[in-house]
Image (tube, rainbow, N blue to C red):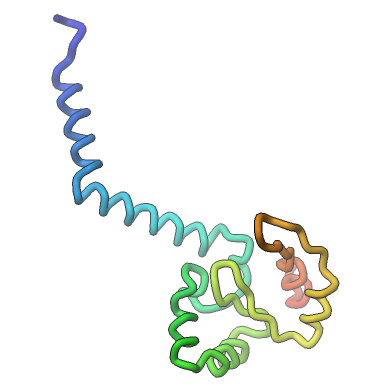
Length: 131
């Protein structure tokens, strides 16, 4: 039959086997982790807030300092190194600016799911002279 091309069917079956095999699963998970890390580091709304590299990708480094009981010392050192606004997680910023609490309490909060979304990147840019 000229309508059936068995080499294409065989190639499709082999690629499916690769996807459901151990290597394909590991490669898929690795690709997903790399794409999430790239998105969080370069394309997040908080990507312009300074902080440690790992803070833009995961919160695990911060958990390590919390479990060791040295979170406050490390946060103080980060603020000395990076300034009043420090990114400490993919979606969290530590603020040590004297007017930080006033700005946060006066900001308009938008309900998103079960949490609150706060638009603070413009305040960070204004405080650091970025336009």
